[in-house]
Amino acid sequence: MSTGLPPQRRPGGGPRGGAGRAMSPAQGAEEAERRLERPCYYAGQRVVGVFACVACQFRINNRRALPSCPDCGELIWAWMGEGERPVPEGEEARAAPQQPAPGPEVQEGVKLEGPGPVKVEEGVKLDP
Image 1 (cartoon, one colour):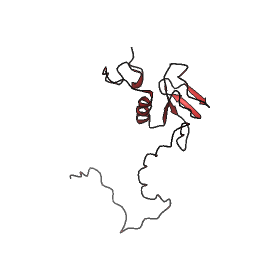
Image 2: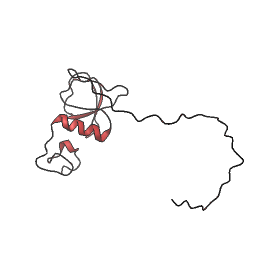
Image 3: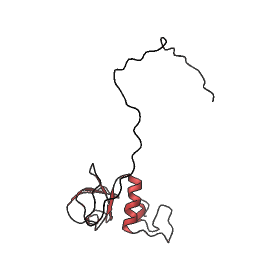
Image 4: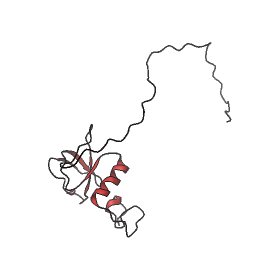
């Protein structure tokens, strides 16, 4: 019956159940943020922007405190904007997650010089 609900809304509190694992809205937002890799907020937080319900994808353009989803009753919302993570009114900014180090620079139109033409062979096995 509740298998289609996100973990924070399931009766056991998570994907594997577990009677003692009830989540607060803040914990549900943190778990949804880990799963979706998007900033997530819970009903009652005052945040401005475009949000989508994590359960049914209902979208709102919020200007006040986040409501519960009018379609399904979910409390957790994913921020759909780009750029800096919005800070809820009355809270301090969180440190942004560290981005991986940039890879090598990519250049277009570079002429490669070498000892001669490249030889292509099929069926070669590379054993470690």
